[in-house]
Amino acid sequence: MMKHAHIALVTGGARSGKSALAERLVLQQGGGRVYIATAQAFDDEMSQRIQLHKERRDQGWITVEEPVDLVGVLSATDGQGTRLVDCLTLWLSNTMGQADIAALVAVLRQQRDPVVLVTNELGLGIVPDNALARQFRDAHGWMNQAVAEVADEVWMAVCGQPLRIKPAPAGQP
Amino acid sequence: MMKHAHIALVTGGARSGKSALAERLVLQQGGGRVYIATAQAFDDEMSQRIQLHKERRDQGWITVEEPVDLVGVLSATDGQGTRLVDCLTLWLSNTMGQADIAALVAVLRQQRDPVVLVTNELGLGIVPDNALARQFRDAHGWMNQAVAEVADEVWMAVCGQPLRIKPAPAGQP
Amino acid sequence: MMKHAHIALVTGGARSGKSALAERLVLQQGGGRVYIATAQAFDDEMSQRIQLHKERRDQGWITVEEPVDLVGVLSATDGQGTRLVDCLTLWLSNTMGQADIAALVAVLRQQRDPVVLVTNELGLGIVPDNALARQFRDAHGWMNQAVAEVADEVWMAVCGQPLRIKPAPAGQP
Image (cartoon, helix red, strand yellow):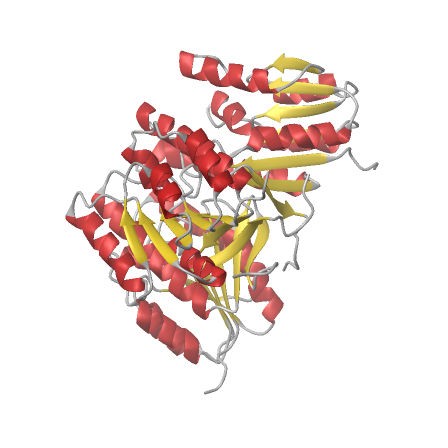
């Protein structure tokens, strides 16, 4: 089986500079650039966030908005250049935590063009009181682990700075 | 005074792959393996989590369930192989935040067999509204600092990947 | 334009050892030491935290308490030695999220004496239900990014151990 194209995962907290870091990783790849937005502009707050992201990206991007069928969009856009998926957390949320992670991993393993995926760290605060929030946090953590395993690179954005997680900068067990 | 046996601390968020990383660290040590579970199966959710952890471990482990007297169990099992303590957060919670951290550090300094301890990062989200949650978060942070200080290795699991914290991969102040 | 004096940013979670790490960074610089406290002792819990911080610092510090006019204090104390700002999160909170981040960055770029600033990671837990908490978290994240960009060093305290974020210990994009 041929090696799939380069896959990178960018994680981090809210307003940590994840999307800007992901865009730099896409630019490093050269070639075409496809922005896959999973956000849904339900309200003014979200519309404003989406607008801010659009303004930061310069010309030369194709934008695809798809809240749910991420697997289909990755298949359909393979061949158009490097895809930036922003972000996995909203995709999982849009599917009420029922996204098919195995199908995502399978499609990532088949890509001929690179993919950079943005996700969040949600599990580093106090345990939520709410059982649904705990279930979402768990499903989200499993998703992050599955995507990081197939990824060639994993980065964590901290205060806008990139911290390399994979390949490990030092020895690992 | 003789150097104590190897001590490793594994931290990270919920569903970040902490326990799996800790198990790999135990297997590296070779010899006998003792799993010290501090969880209490109060409800179905917790029973399910414990079951998932049990299924992942293969044969060859002795399992000890002890929610409160961790210090006693560490003393009693020294000589039976590498102990995996999973986890310190539940231990502290089981004692209502009143666990004797100094006694834990003292017993760790006396071990002849290795110990790998799992904990959580709880302090990286928004400040909790609840004063009790803030107090627990503080006690938990002091515990993590005290155990990390006596530990030879500290790892943080991020998206299932190991990030080495101690010894520092780069220069430190 | 002359290079500004050394600027360091220390981030991390609650009770992660941020302030102790920041104090070590100040001691490395040598010379005079000025502690700029942004905390307001509204209640017993906060008074106790401030007292704990005071007790840890040894003799040889000048202490300035200023909850809001951080920019003015940095200008006024330049020439008195290394300043430790503890912390940016409380400063932003004291200004109801309206702190002038651009003015802070501008004054940092003009310093002749070193500055070590403490902040927090607030964005690594579940998304807060509360819209005000989300807005504060966003403003706080932008602040952290802006200060980290001007800083020569960024550290994250994890379980009391220093993790270097900037300059990156490994290659970066």
